[in-house]
Image (tube, rainbow, N blue to C red; front, top):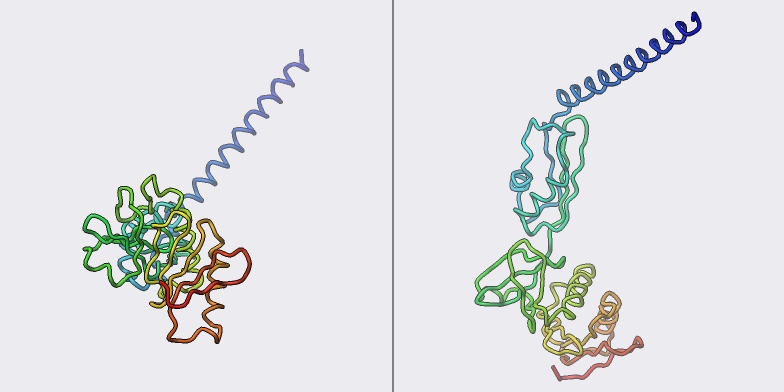
Length: 257
């Protein structure tokens, strides 16, 4: 009987010990949360990488106010808010710098291309996002994408071509990215998707460049750059450059565009 009573007392002490430990953990967690709420507040917002937009515009679009708690901020909500309000921003990184600074690093899209449809010029970034809608008459200052049709275009959304151009869409997006990575976007006067077997790119005001759909455009652009750097290509020459050969050779048809 005495042994049973001793066992019950030990179990009681064990249960009390567990509750004491649980209560201690809760108190510690509450203290930590209270400290974070009281001390880690946003007193500074530092924006870097902007060109088109001002730091004030980006801060306003973020929805973050001075005095907000650093750790209660959802960084993904901040990113979504900025890209929704400021479509020319292609990439965003949001980081906390203790004790009181929020860092917002942005990368804006470069020169967009224009696709004219229904009286509007829809500007498309290298990342494949529709960044602006302009009157058709203002399209001339951009490289023109033609031979295809946008599906329900809207500023801030990703490029989507009508169903019958689905096969061209992937190649167009890959080419835009390759041009941006190579720093060649400014050289392109137009991209034409009207041919079903290959796409055409109007380049530096002098050449039409033929490339296969689904090609490795990073490599194709390297071949193109090397060709135009060859001393055999005179500054007054025009023509068609065909990059569809499987070898590294480039076929040039002088004068024909």
